[in-house]
Amino acid sequence: MFRTAVFASLLAALPCAAALAQAPVSVPSAPAASSATPQPVAQQVLDAEAAIAKSDWKAAEAKLTPWIAAHPQDARALFDAGYVADAQNHLTQAAALYRRAIAANPNSFDARLSLGLLLAREGKFTEARSQLATATSLNPGVGGPALKARAWRALAQIDRPRPGHPGNAAQASNDLLHALKLSPETEDDTLLAASLAESAGNSASAEAAYRRVLAKHPKSVRANSGLAHILIKNQQYPQAQTLLQNALKEIPNNTVLTAQLALVLADLNSPEALPLTERLHQAHPNDTGITSMLAQLLYNAGNYAASDQLYTTLLASQPNNESLLVSHGQNLVQMRKFADAFLVFKKATELDPADPNAWSGLAFTASQTDQPSTVLYALTMRSKFLPNNASTYFLQATSYDRLHETKQAALYYHRFLDSAAGKFPTEEWQARQRLKLLEK
Image 1: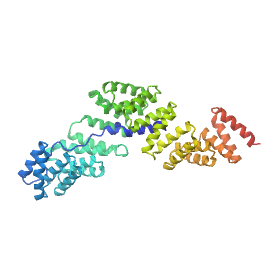
Image 2: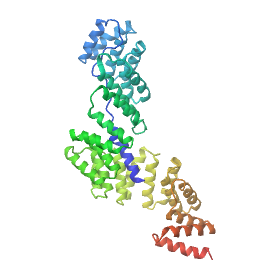
Image 3: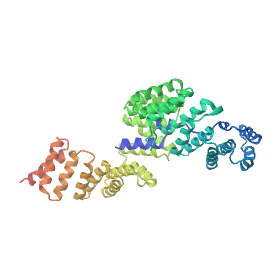
Image 4: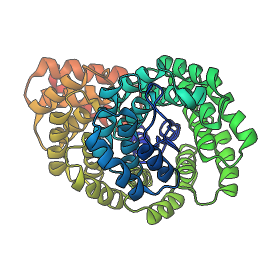
């Protein structure tokens, strides 16, 4: 459980393979004329576009503002004004102008593409997808197939699975195929294809794609990280270690690759994992993924106080993070602060009643604080998600024993002895002694 939580936290905090596969969405490199503007272009608009070509935004605005005031339905001028605002990161103004251009000319490829790209940058993926999908059905004009391919690539980025969004890997792959029919494959395309293959469970295809990129670009962080992610997922830790160590020789001190190497070393139980992660944390003290990883490694090393200090720091900004609470509770248990741990596990079960680890922690700390009824309730809840084992049988037996429910106590002592099979000699001796008394 802890290993999974740490890895999930790291992936959320660092640009993992899936996140790195997303190419940045930017404004067009130059405004193209609207493909559906049949009337002659006014000289004032052409002058504005000449200023735009020189990135002289003020001069362009000076030309466009009075023109649009007098000609509010000029789709080309509206698009140009939107582009000028977009290039200056005035996104609200740019979006409004793009929308006006579309209202004036619904077949404006440029306005729909630019609005879709802008909305995607803002995370408004549903609306962005609608604009981009429409753009793919329109004539791109002088932009030609390459510009339409850009719309398809943007759709692929929206449709791909990403953290917090399941996406549709099949649809994203289809989008990418449309783009590749219109323009040559790029490194970003190969990386996206690898990410989509991995999302679809096709690790072999993903690995092959990452290796194709590395054959041409051995210093690609995204390809090295993506391939390492597959190797880690497939538990090919020695191969992942070699890959990452070689990559870091070429790309020293890269945070993503260093963090992945630390994870691999931890999986290999290497003593190098802890000092490496400590150095990484010193360089990035505010990175929650790295902090979580270091906290887990300190826990594994038995340094519960130091581990808990880090978890407490993380909980200060994420007080309702159930996974962090469980880890915090585990540290408190190791430090024998059972009453405090009980309250922590209780909160964790309230936040996520489906976490068996939280119920396990609550049951154990309830047993240590003489709350047998709570022990039995917690174990009942835990059994909905995980099977019972020798430890849970023993807790059930001792709890029923404390409640003077003799038959149930004897039943669970027997179940404990049947499953313990000599692995818990102290508890097994105690169970036999209790059964002698209970079964008189």
